[in-house]
Amino acid sequence: MEEEKKHIDELIATYLTEGLDKNALAELKAWIAASPENEDYFIQQREVWFSAVSREAASKYNKDKAFDTFRNRIGSRKQVEKAPRREFRLSTLWRYVAIIAVILVVGCFSYWQGGVNVKDTFADISVEAPLGSKTKLYLPDGTLVWLNAGSRIVYSQGFGVDNRKVELEGEGYFEVQRNEKLPFLIQTNDMDLRVLGTKFNFKNYVEDDEAIVCLLEGKVSLKNKYIDCEEIILSPSEKIVMNKETGHMKKATVRSEDARAWTNGELFFNEEYLIDIARALERSYGIEIEVADSLKRRRFYGDFLRDGQSIDDILGMLTSTGHMKFKFEKNRYKLY
Image (cartoon, rainbow, N blue to C red; front, side):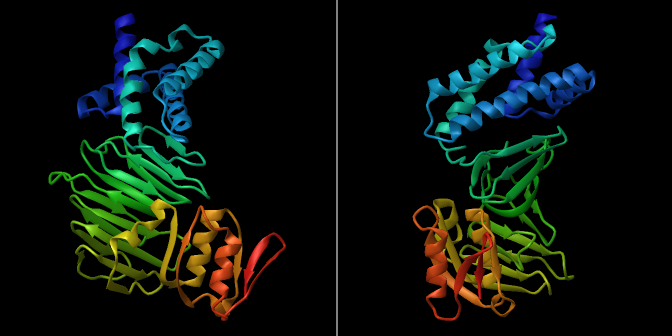
């Protein structure tokens, strides 16, 4: 019995850190489905794991402190758990904490400000970046992902084993690991992307009027879901801007440093609609902005520092053109 428990802990730890192959994943799924107690045990260990990771990732990584955080959380769980089978075997998972710690220190979760919401139904994993912050993570295949404020990515437990499909809501910057046998697919309501190994930024918030894909390296193909047309291939330093009302897609050039500027704390807007700029500021600063109808379709260019400039500073610069004014009234900003 003890050997079986140790084996299950090994499976859970490997699943949380490195990912399981198809057979091991099937074994773990079968064990979880065997009883409610097994499912509860798995959920508890997963919650403890992500809780310990996210706390340490919010600041400069410290290995000893990470271990202490993980151990303290496990200790707290032990005090409230009554069923003997739910006792957490720290020794089994301790070395896996070191694995995730190494990943963290080289940058996997080097920026995790404001917390992150991780939900796991075992069919899918959902990671969200809260409003006012951004999140950095690695997918099981080693692909680097930055999620901008108010964004969410969803992928299956089989990711990297039999597929590399993700669903994206919001904005994400991707550095995809090359795998010719398993192309990387991003699905959204408006367009789908297919890549092998590349670096690109994909912005497609539900409330925005435009979806934008910027390619930094490699090659991607795009499928428009609004109109029936051939796939569009992007080359490095190119971007596609799609009007989500008409489905029209326009190709243009882009500087790579501008495409991912937001990952470094910049707010870069290149001839974007004022209404979309206002929504981006709302997500970044956790505020509300009301834009007059006559201004919504005006385009603006701007480059600001999220951490160095207040929302009043940014709105002041936008209105310095003389084409509009702003004021704070009834707990919201108004552009008019």
